[in-house]
Length: 191
Image (cartoon, rainbow, N blue to C red; front, side):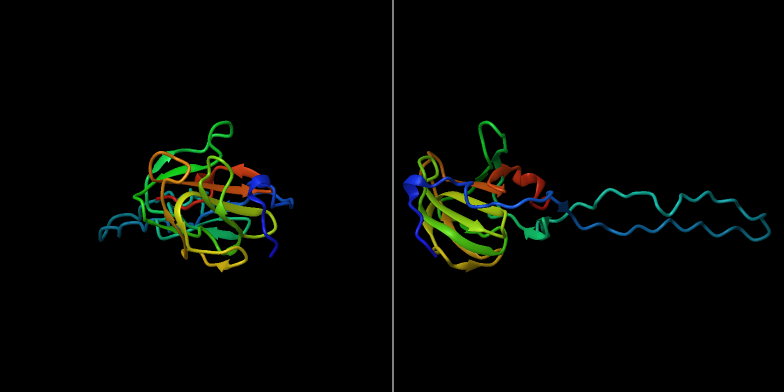
């Protein structure tokens, strides 16, 4: 894999493809409630039932579940709470709380395309390419556990959380589709 010159690194430049975003969660099948038994000697009760095709909202996904984007399953990179949410103008991802040294995990299977000192404001940075159009970005790490070109699996340790390029320990996490940042909360499983 060719080396990346960090002075010219554009975090969103590596993914090019087209196609609609698909976000899905697991759904829980529902069964209509059973009618209570009729008392002996009473006329049969008329029970109104709803049509079997009533759309059900998706069931919440637990922290151990995953959300998907274009068929790629994603999980949370750290267990910490959300400090800052996605905003197209000021925050291209999430800021996630943690303690210095906490494990940062790959959010999805992929290949590391950058591991090193990132552009100004990102500190120690890992970028994982998941398919032709999806990248995940992990910034402000204390130390990096992966090298460029290395294949990673969802949940695998890729770094240790830190405060490189920022004032407090946290992870800045982005998901980019076709080079453009998207809201990670729309992809990650609910918790």
